[in-house]
Image 1 (cartoon, rainbow, N blue to C red):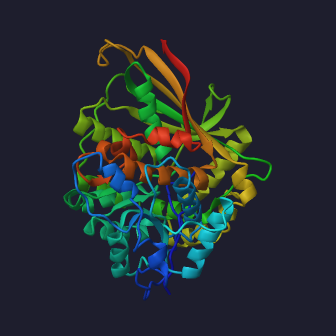
Image 2: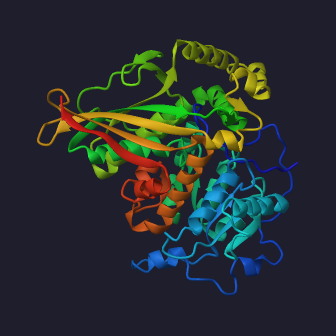
Image 3: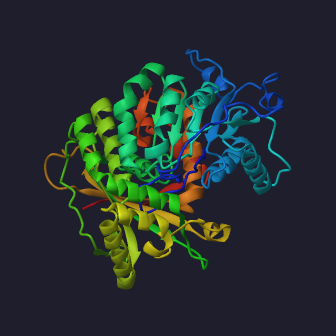
Length: 490
């Protein structure tokens, strides 16, 4: 049986997308091709001037024109449908330089058509425009992936868990000169792709950029925003995530849960992978950032807090390493936490966490965790995912507390003497904010190409987008960056 998965948004586990366990079989697949009659829909005969063509007109470089500027792969999955809606909204918003030619891709044409119809309905339209194509493509068929990659400039990959289904898409994109954006929060996948494909992606001028959802654009870009707003040298940041839900509560699709289970089982392999990559150490500039405890009372929020166990810390560290080694920028130390409420909530989270860690060490335990996500997560993860009412009633705030040294002060001498507080606020994080982040990352890749790293490669969001207008684009779409308190002399 051949199945295409979907993306599931990250929140409190190190995952980024929903998918199917590796025990599922993958068989024959349909080739990547337009639906009957789609040649007209895709604009094969009378194509408008493309978004990328207008962007390229401002520069001297030449690039081959492709049928589409972006393709949403895994569009019929749980998160994929939100990404499709966001692409459609962005394409019709009037803020791009030109028409956006895009397509949806997946295995089942009927489901893909239903996703497009749902997106049109959500946008109050009878149907989406003729520039939208539909491609049949299967992650288990390399030829179909190659055919998809040859037709587009950027693939938005919503098929996960990425540790099982991500590499074939990356491989197809790199080999055929297409860029790829995903919403993975799985460090082993992200860093494994760097080890295997970074040099080849550079040769092909392809940008492979992971963690472009809630994991980890708010954290990665939030640190850079905080750095840019401090008049001086930022040396350390702590972030605190708070998620607010309405009367219906909130939950997450169990695809994220599965990725967390698999990630826990693979911790030793991640350590071996990092030794193989041979990362250079990131120097500590200024006073060393002290780690908080497993549970602590936060005076800033008047509630208990715990370490955030997503991929944010590892992604931010990769960005800081790149910015220091390649652009000679001062590296920023970073720690991530999330508010947990009162003592009762903390005890409940700790019990669930201990049970997760214990069961995750054994094959039988992992099977139980995957089979009964709602029970073992105390209702935070379900097989159905959140309802629309739950999504509409949920929002997030990520608060950054930064410290550093004023202009003219040597960070290597003395204590930090300035501080700053910033925030990133947005709608429901797992699916709405994730879709906004993913799509706006793709728009930045297409429109801000002169501000990307000079060479293609495998990048974290901060490394790829630090010089682009991504933060401005996100703010316009409701993921807002702001300064809460100005710097103060300590």
